[in-house]
Length: 135
Image 1 (cartoon, rainbow, N blue to C red):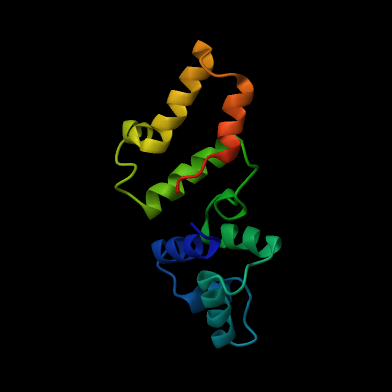
Image 2: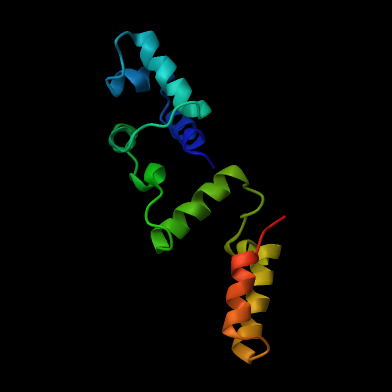
């Protein structure tokens, strides 16, 4: 999910118009400009700089990781990924078990089991991870 899509979802959840959010962020040399800037963020035409991402998080009363993405590979990053994946595709993650029944997780578990049983080497496993694609 893009940063702009997240901004839009959270803004709507907070019952704010683009104009109201833009004004709250002091993006107004005029209220219309504030609305335009938020619209550009949501459409992905512009990306807010880090200081505005932090200000967006504060204004929308959410953890900044929702916009900054956090540090890749951390549990926080993984959880945020799953949370936003659920928002973009609710059917995919209807249950926690459903996450791991998805084909890509099944494939990963199969490869991991093969590594642990000695059927493939660590190098073969790592090569698979480097080459993996959902397409």
